[in-house]
Image 1 (tube, rainbow, N blue to C red):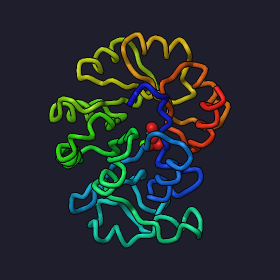
Image 2 (cartoon, rainbow, N blue to C red):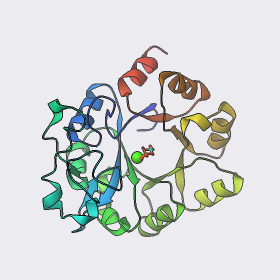
Image 3 (cartoon, helix red, strand yellow):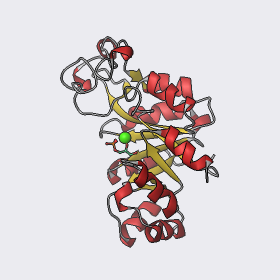
Length: 240
Ligand code: G3P
Ligand code: CA
């Protein structure tokens, strides 16, 4: 899986379709992405869902937090019309459905733990899908969440979202078997990437805000990017 450059669609092709919806995920694969990034949160009744923000307002017609509602209630929300009228009727997606639909495809699945307190449910679902472990990477900004995941699952790939790091931090990450470092693109340098690779980490950049940043990351030698416009990254990779 990892020999190819990771063109990971950030919440799907979120520049072109409402983030974290089936429309955005399908569109990104049509555009040449070879991976999907998404965000995990929990409903009131313990269903893991794909949703970025703490609140529902920005990307649905709901109010409050996902955890204020049951999955049945959340499924009634419109998660598409905020983006464009043509996406009216797009729904929130459960983690189960996401794995069921995309788990069979030869793509990376980058799953970001957006909150603590969901580790048990996420682990339970992962254990039901052991056959997907080669393509799944659990990521988080929070070291303790990664630590908890590792304690409960000894082989799932772990990635750490970091704004800065030093040798000591890298050592702690290695101790729990983190294999991927995800720095924001603005902090990426060729020297930093080289150092991380020397430590044995994969490097996947995120927050790639424009094409010049995308090219900078490519020149710096990263192994992949999480990107809102996988078509442009695909074009750049093809022309290399
Ligand atoms: O891939 C990392 C990136 O998704 C982290 O930031 O805010 O888009 O979840 P955010
Ligand atoms: Ca994310």
